[in-house]
Image (cartoon, rainbow, N blue to C red; front, top):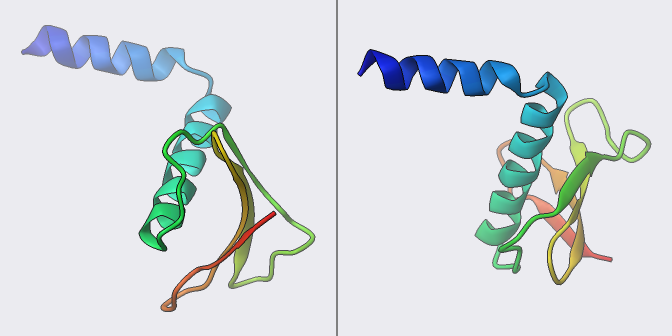
Length: 84
């Protein structure tokens, strides 16, 4: 059991911090897109749109295998998702 924990810690620490955060962001945003009924089975990338974001509403641009979306994450409400 300790060997598996050690391998997991080594693997996580061996990845660059930015790569881990970017993978997490695209997977989380893709999950939001799918929850709203849009297709995003294979997210390729996600980046935050700082110009369109507001203090309480982050805007992300996500590229999936067959579509691209602008996703506005609104707290305590449904996300606003626009294909582009």
